[in-house]
Image (tube, rainbow, N blue to C red; front, side):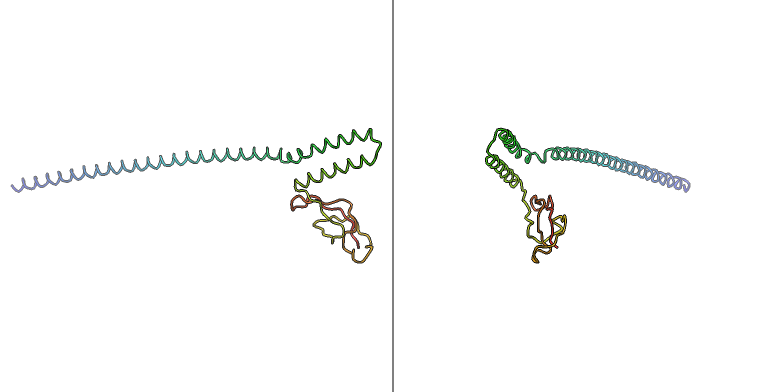
Length: 185
């Protein structure tokens, strides 16, 4: 009887162990399934991130090309408005040259040239060009280009601009041509 009891206990222990192994095995299988699904999730996220990166990169590349093209087009036509404004002046000069061939009155030719000069000055002023006043001003190397020094005719002209060989010009607030001047020493 004792042997029977021991055998039954062993059988029941083995049954319990077998059930536990099955439970552990099932739990292990679901853990593997969870791990696989976590791996699959990470792989899917990686694929999505790579796709998003490639699309963003392509979009940026298109943006860069488009802005480069727009800049090139802008450079080609950046002076267009000034050129278009100067075309009527070219027409006026052509008419003046044709009229000089037949002109006998110098005063009329002079008046015509003065009209064209005034029209040119006003057109350039509308585009932002301003002449620089240099005569009598104190010499400033940031605005003037000294050609030579001469003895000052009076003491108050020492270090000042005595004569101007070429006018200087501003475009807006920026100097685009320095005035070529003679300075009193």
